[in-house]
Amino acid sequence: MHRILFLLTFFVASQSLCAQKLDSLLAIQRKADPQEKVYVHFDKNFYNPGETIWFKAYFLTGSEPSDASKNFYAELIDEQGTIVKQVTAPILFSGSSGSFELDSAFSKPVVYFRGYTVTMLNGDTSFLYTKPIRILTTKAPDAKTAVAAAPTLKFLPESGNWIAGVPSRIAFAAVNEQGLPITINGSVVDEKGAKVVELKTLHQGMGIFSLIPEAGKTYTAHWKDESGKMYTTALPQPNAEGVQLRITEEAGGNKRFTINRSAGVPEDMKQLYIAATMNQALIFEARVNLEAKLAATGIFPTKDIQSGILQITVFDASHKPLAERIVFVNNHEFEFDGDIFLSLKNFNRRGLNQAEVIISDTLAANLSLSVTDADLNESDRMGDNIVSRFLLTGDLRGTITDPYYYFFSNDDSASVYLDLVMLT
Image 1: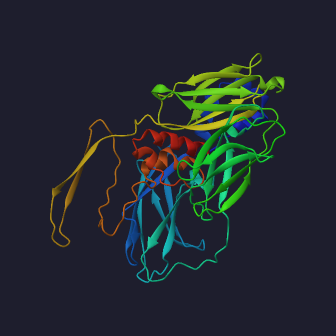
Image 2: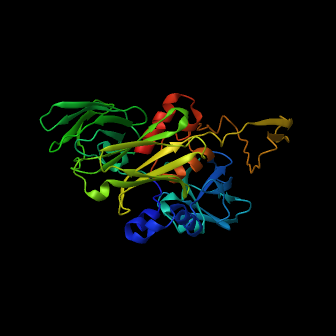
Image 3: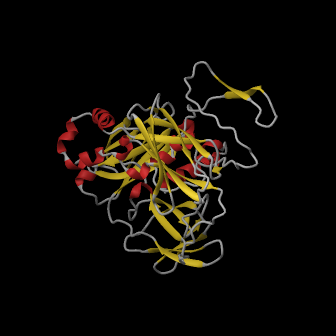
């Protein structure tokens, strides 16, 4: 679900890396393959034929303003995948702006904005910026043949491993046929029909439960959706042997890791190496000796690092990745206070108004501001914005419903629910 460091492939393919510094390898990767991200701010949420779509794009590499690319390529694409319009705009000071003129006879009710740089095309193209834009026309969207499909329930063991005899946490995600989250409840039973654990979504179709799977047993979820219809879904078969990684939150914002192994693992799974990286930089590394014990625990000091997705990987003695987990670190250092006021007010038709934005003089700012009719442009307050794009959605495949909720809400549950996003 996230950008996997190609370093892992190197670990598997090359034995010579054991003598090299991991942080040096990551520095080489940052230079050779910068992970550039973009967020695009539009002047409003939907448009009439004949209007102009104004936009401004912002670029980061890691957590810093990006200078990796010279031009920004923007396209409008229809529902059939045909490119309707194209614009190329220069990137200056890690920003780029441009516009699309919509013809007065434009009849497509929805177009898709796609934006990218050459640097982004050199990486995983599933991370290119895309956004649907609604056009107010009298034409209805193209009719699509309805296909009856059942909702989907997926189970995802923490760190990717579910091992017989080892205490495990299993996350799950339930979506309908459109890929939207749904509420479900039910239970997990074994092959004899005996109930093992309750099953209930906690937030946006996601949930989690704990279980110690037994060797030779199979497990099945019996659950019902919001309409009350019943379904059954088989859980993945537990592995007989292996290594598992668990991450929990500590007081003060640090993360605790626990590494468990089963009793019968080979010798190279008893001498382990754990590494945590963010934005192609090494945050933490440690050797873990499980020769004489089945588990070890420690703490990642994360309270003083930048906010973002932390990727934690456990390797065996041969540098083969065994378990991986991503967690989110939110230290709120990206937040700042600002003020806006109208220095010139004129409520006459097409009257001139001037707004001033004030921020601390210790901050360097690159800003854009749009003013539109609030009655005609409903605000999607919890939708994707520049914060959630650069810290969350820009590094994860798939759709995250209401991504800004995890940054806007002050509820303790928000961080718990964000960890469900990391697990699923």
